[in-house]
Length: 488
Image 1 (spheres, one colour):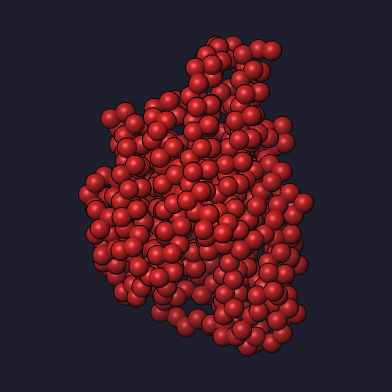
Image 2: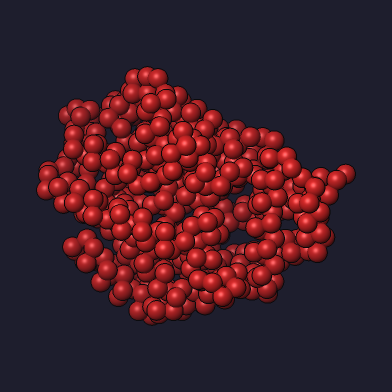
């Protein structure tokens, strides 16, 4: 065996262990009994200790250096790029800090869920303060005197910085605010009916299959906060159900299917290697947001969905497919990011981006976070937060230490806008097939252009390659939104 061969063999074992650790997280969100939280914290810490030791062992560093000196094959070089990034990052983080974070965030997630149910931010604030403290320690170790928040962003979107995001968001905000003002000045239909849980879940499974999700390698479960977990041959998704809002379930499912199909669609030769998973969260979000919005909320697809919903639920008070399309895309005041319309979604992200930057910089204390959130929300959206679960407690991310993750949602929208523009010129009969409830032409194009490559290319390079070489910008997304909502 060459140094590279030995290294990849070891990496496969480590990737397998990481998948097991991820399964612990999936179980915690879906099936774990409440009383198991403390034990699960110890289990997660133990797994993190094993993984951290494997990531930082001297033999890995020696094999990596030898392989870097020998390999010229393009795929091997891409594998080594990921291994080097992971090795250097892990080596800078003390083992006891990595274990402490795993234990704490496991415990904090349960406390967040309880505080959210009780609308009691004060009950959650102390453990969040500990999470922020440890994330600042981690960022300081990784950044080596650089910007703390940039070090955290890089874990989710390699090469991205807060300064680049500030520039991007400053470009996006004026057009989004203007479009929102025009959209909110119109009347939008609402759906007012009761939709039983079981038929919703049956329809959600049908949608998942239509969009290409392979249930022989995955499953759909319920969770407080929908998510996708795993890669390769075990990719699981969750959704949630409201019996007064079927779109919560249906479009959450389609969104998570976008994530899952990315993982299921990666070249099997990359399985259980660093290339065998999505290259970044921004690219991941480009898939989920494109599945959910440009495809799933299109006039063609909602025309088909309208008739499927009538067949499933009977008459639910919407007179025709066009009214249904406008109801699906309704621009409306609301507090919840995951339920936000396309026009306002990125404004929700910008709020979180600025607040978490301030938390990591030490400019905002967790004790003041709820008030800061409420003040910023009122300034950005023009109305007040009425309870904590509609404000600072609505998202799980900070409880599990995902600082730097939120901006990748907006970046994913930008990437999705670029991909959709390219797709419309490349996929014959796109609208005709969507009107039949068949998005496979679109999803096959995405699998070929984006998903199969896994982590082979850097994020922006991957999107540029998929779009014929064009550097990703916000323009295609903003043009798409203005074109779409002008007709609504």
